[in-house]
Image 1 (cartoon, rainbow, N blue to C red):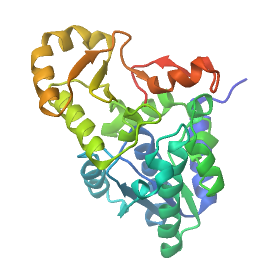
Image 2 (cartoon, one colour):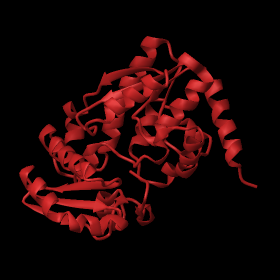
Image 3 (cartoon, one colour):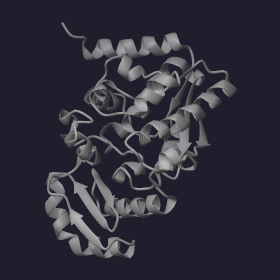
Length: 285
């Protein structure tokens, strides 16, 4: 007989209690918000939210994370990360996420040491074990715990538990580091990150919820949920005008729709990662 939802939640609390103190890598997303919420309930001020400030982070998310931490009375710090100074990150090979997470987890560990905190933790969950996540290797090397994953909680269970806890992030669309918008081999620069961020911010202002702007040199490939495809077509003139203003020559709409890790598809075709890691999702990275 499998572990029940309530048993998983009890296990999560027990894990955090056993940890004693924890610095949580906190992005303001669904998973890290729920982890920080429970950590604060269990550990109080022995739980610290560490917000990474990076050019690869979508504009506005850092302020949202800071505001939420303040509203909930969580201890938090904002720290600058410098993954763009690492040429192994900028060159954007398939292990890019490993180098990004190595930088982030190193910064969180330094903060934890300064604060006398035992453990560092991230918001990885049980579903991440079935996806291509180079960052999980960095977590293992840096001694980062993943309490949600250790408790066996899935993404959907985290959303349900977040709703029950009254967290506004329970149905928040997933977002990911802006560097995930570039095909492997495209050198990542601050200018390109700002271009993609501005394009996605415009789509958000138009009311789209779950989407990605994938950057292919002079081409912007827009992924929206299939249910939103007709609206994207209706607003095509507005979108094209804005994207050309941002520097794109061509603007395309991907008819497959939004899905996690679409830029990993060449790796699946070559057999570098399993083919079944591609999913069309309502909620995902």
